Length: 224
Length: 248
Image (cartoon, rainbow over all chains, first blue to last red; front, side, top):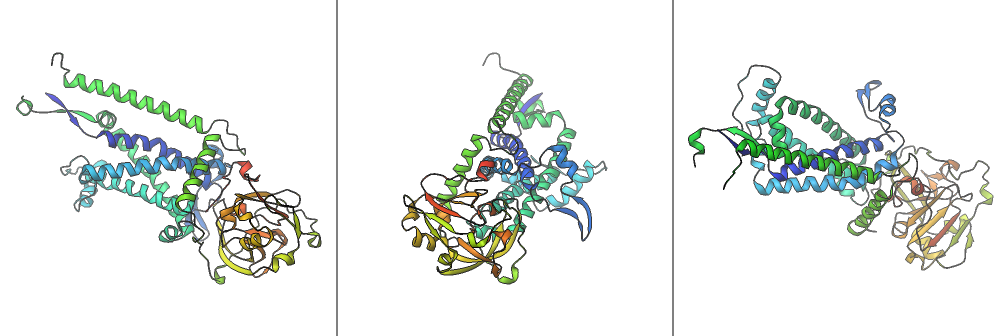
């Protein structure tokens, strides 16, 4: 017979689903700000492979010429982003769930197996708890990145009053560079994450929504 | 308990509830987004909820962070870059330096007219800091001039208690409002020199503001009027959606 098994606690699900639209809006408003001074590129010397961002992209998305709005949105929604992230970290620390989230020494080798398996190679997967090794690494990294976004963001926001913080992340220009690439990291994470969620299927998605999954157990184990 | 749900029924119930919560959340999020963006038009002022948040942020920063003792980082002269001339509002071409003077109005007092020599008679300070544009770029620049705090003490004594300072160009083509704590910050200068030379016309000759605790938009060029006032002054970029305080 089948029984309900708890997969994700309410606090985890709440923080996850609040973060999704808020981070999206932070990225959008961040782009409105970045447009006003957009120096970053992939390239070296005079060779530019890709400029962030080409004119066609600005025109297509309509994010040009809205710096004031971008700043106002960014500095309003940053509160929700920060408080939600801090709440998640506190919850994860106090509940003990960090044990299932943080990578273990063996996670890095196992994550390679998970990656090979997901790319279609026939590799035996190691046993896993709530998260597999690749998930432990990527989900921990994304939380760490959130913290770094907050820190570098504050360093750009108040470089005079928080001069020590700005200095700690390498100065004003580095802070903006780091803040930008962290954001690109979220975009990369998002693409892979959505792909993996689609691959994992309905039951996995349902567990992130409801917190539960239906799992098969042996009769004897569930006898009352 | 009678009519106990089977695990399958329980799962369905929770799934329905989950989607209901997700849908409600999506409606709330969309409504909130609609609300904070309501009435926004490109190039215009920002909607009221966002303006309130900027004010709230300023109150938090003022209470938690701002201090006269928090000095912006200064640099050696070797770090000086070439400051871009980013705006010419209030800088008409037919400017004649001989006609220039500065009108200062203490709070509740009468205006008086000053010359550049009056300002040069005050103690001269030099500082090299990273001038930060609201667009996101910055350039290390050296300014030299009188402290606005010294200027205030001499020409508008008592006006340090006025909550705001208003500054504008002769033609009112550009105007800024400052909160007085930032205006009398020890690094705020009425500058008549930049990078070791007298101010160039395009950088606001003969007298401009150098206020390193604010974005460049507050560093008004070719100041013609300074007034200490009780209410928030008109501010060019505030009217175009930017934060009134624009503090760093």
